Length: 423
Image (cartoon, rainbow, N blue to C red; front, side, top):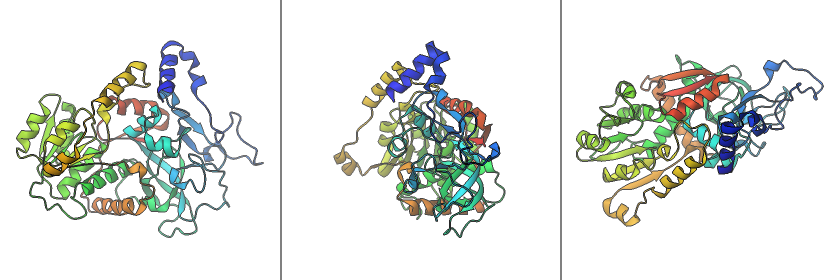
């Protein structure tokens, strides 16, 4: 990843005319003249369009490609059927895995994880797929075909859900268990904004001891970093549903304060205008039963220090360890990342016991073997949506051809809510 990113940076900075040579193609991609080897010609619109990343690097790696006839994208949990990210040709009469559907995808969301995948820094992507890879988790569209054992869905159903990579695509092969009917009143773009962030938020609250049973801790204060972001917006709303409070949200700019308040924060801390931890102590002088932290090195130690006895620090990301607003990672960025990694806090097991604090971390992209856990979380989220207890975060919609712009926006740290790509 290091050398691939440095090469992308060097070429883009000094010899940009050579950038096309850094874009490896995959055998599943359509020939420039079209693939007619099957003996039949198909309308180009019937072929899967997807965003392929050929190797780690800058935004030049985000290639909008068309796949060969009847090829679709797949997640890594279907590796027993085919090697991800592409299926074999699946013609009309071909059998698909009995528990799966082919989804005509109409929208997918962009997550910061996708940027890390492009840089080559996302462990599950490297371990289970490699390169080329079609990134993305969230999908929303219509069922095109069902496997023989699928009874909960039928062709034409409007559904949304998660795939373990492969979502940046117009057609996806996906287990039916990972999909749910789209609640009434939600657009495709709104539905695509929800799955990964809501599932991450609810699992985090489960690890914190607040779900499925409501918290019985005497202190119910929760502090949520990046409260106006995708996961943060879900954490705020779910915390209110589960009876936690005060719900203290942290945002990085004044432009995000109103959004955090509208989501239900009892207190919003704008760390661009006030000292974060002084404000956090004012909001809950006795400390916090839970702190949700995806920042990394910039806040982890202080987050731990502000827990009460029996408090839990839940970690699901390391944004501050990574550069902001960088298409490719130049040599200096790697030096900075190494420096930050060397400053990551360590937590003494003896201190954890004597202080009665816990530190827990997770990443749902590793949960291929935990389908029932994720399915139960998804059922609860759908129930809350149906009773209008959850609202969709603010959605910024872009066309598929603007995927580079979408990555630049989420890298900038200035986005609010979710970025969704319309296929």
